[in-house]
Length: 274
Image 1 (cartoon, helix red, strand yellow):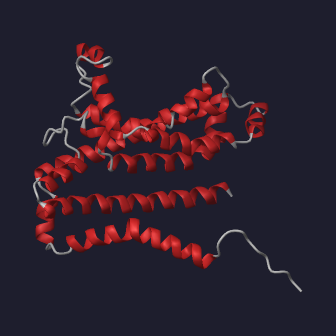
Image 2 (cartoon, rainbow, N blue to C red; image 1 turned 90 degrees about the vertical axis):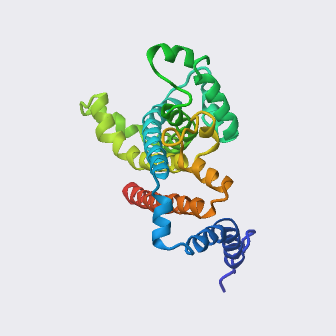
Image 3 (spheres, one colour; image 1 turned 120 degrees about the horizontal axis):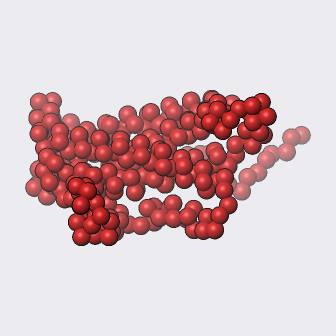
């Protein structure tokens, strides 16, 4: 007679119920309320509110700066993850801990710090101004803030993959006469590329919805340095709830599309690893 297996964890029914309850309260109900309020608008009203000149400028800056920041993080994050996993040096543990600093630091504090550093008279800004580079209160400041907040996503996504890479494959490539560049392109890059895409997508998604770290360094100039999340807050302060909902729906739709891309990349990566 087969013995019934017991588990100290709750059963599937209870855990599924708690999961659905938590997901509904935190995600589904708020998003459903937003969609319900937005459905009260006609398509013409929604289009007019979501495609004003100020909104289009905010979309352009938000998506453009997010793409640039995620691309920078993809390159710098790969290098940083490689150094942390492949080399031993004094201060390595401290550097590894500092990678998570943007997660622990309140975004408003990060924005104030970056604005002070890159201001014309700041520690870093005073060296950029003579070169004609304006760090704070510019579009470059938005990119800097988004790069700061998105870096941990790339590093933490790549680190486990780099740690689990089999060194024997690299040694085999070396014994067959492959140089470092050929080994990286033919052996390492194919295994690192899928998680790198995932880290890039996560950093890109975080940057789209970032507010606290950007609002202080951007200057919030309409049609110039104003991001979409800040414009939503401005519409709410003006009691223009219809305009705020239209902007929020646009970002929501784009976020869902990005989420689908992330899931596709993860599935493709899991099939590739097999």
